[in-house]
Length: 60
Image (cartoon, rainbow, N blue to C red; front, side, top):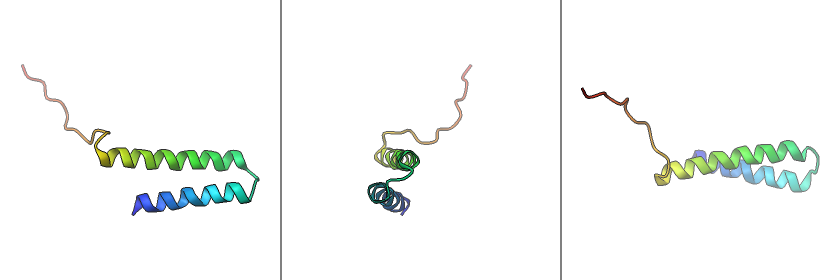
């Protein structure tokens, strides 16, 4: 669900960038942030990013 919302938000930002050509820098920054979040979610889902790991125990 979050992936769908982020993808939809990214699409809206792209459309706004094409239609309303003001504040392109801010819109590009927002698009970059959304794309990075989507990329992290996709990489986490595919197993390319490590998940939470327990604290390392020291063996003596």
